[in-house]
Length: 296
Length: 288
Image (cartoon, rainbow over all chains, first blue to last red; front, side, top):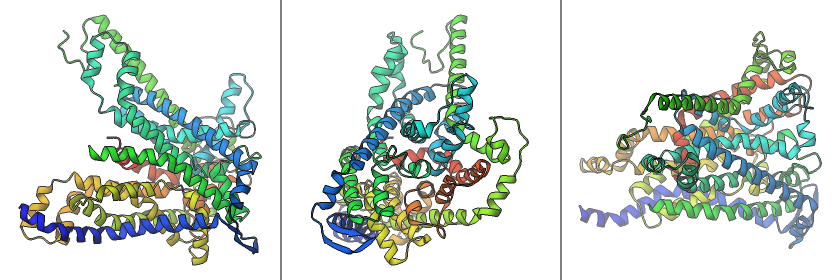
């Protein structure tokens, strides 16, 4: 048995290589080619509207971008969007996971309803919220606030970024809930019971047993959400188009404006490089964590 | 008393039973109200789809005479079927190719591991973390120059590559869970690698492969960055079609709702069915 294994190793190595080749080659191309091009373009003078002006630009694109107030507005918006959505979904998701872990009548169906928004395509959730929920005169929210005697809020003109945060949080809260509920399943019930016997209240149990148990799952949720939230696009595209002014323009939307509306390939690429660097900072931590898990 | 295993909180007295009972009722109320509030926009959208356009913008009301007017309108006027067909073609096409490329790769990693397997897996995972917007410019230019803009083929290529890391990863975890003895036994009986894969591995891991495929279908179906940027009309899937409601003329809420309901219904049901596997795929096994 051992002998066949040992002699099979080199043959196995070769077979592994050929079986792996398609996936590895394609992913390598998918990574290197566009990445290389983005990097290359970011140092070029390249505007599709001005075909005559080409050539090496050095750091010009970066300089132009970094001194553009729009970039800093977009960075600020990106940060606010990511920060608020993370806060809402992680805190809310944890509380909801605790709630949906309790036994009650029809829990299975209630769970399914609560995670549903995650499966709704982003353009649908954004437009349903923008129109039927947040419309200043015919929306459900306007109707609700008027029926308790408060003036209706014109969400997208007076609180544009908040509106986007609400929509995106609605989509990602179920994601946090789904992951954390799964993590809750491995919570040691006996330990909880023992703590209860020792007189620990539900709050103490939450902070000293549940929360520490969920620590790892929570950090996974944070990192995965960060990677997706850094480049929220469709929700902004169909609701505010980045406006009013730059109020809801995030980094992804700014790059889109520079690339496909201004046709300024050079600056857009410089923006792309910045987005990649930001995402990679998060990704390093996530990959490390997954690697650690792979060893167990 | 304390030795009683109390998953059901064994009642100690009538008052204890009462308080357990009222706690359960309270939890039921709370759990259901939270779930209904979260689900409300979807419920409201489904309802609005069955209203007339004038009823759709009137004061919110649960009582109205349902009509299929909007559904008919969406089909007749905007050619909903064409976009739905694009979504189906792109989602299933990309899933087919992703599985085709990923199965040999995951097979090699699970059954013929080398020193580099773990590194390869992690590297594949890291390609998934490249933000799409970072490579928007080159992909757009490549697509423009090769005539792939606004084609189904173009989207299928992008989605295949986009989902490949997740598909390889998920298949790997399913293959690894498979008892090795069965494959060994097959090999003893003289099965070739191909026979081993087709007659042992694939049938035995079919549920895993199916849920991996479903996840890939869901992710492609709902993808809205590339579909909005790389398609205009011919290859536009449902995500892009729904986006066209962002600047409509006249009354459109009922039509938007009807179209949206049809666009999300299949995926919502698939999502409900595959929640568990979803977690596995989306967290790369980091949460169990």
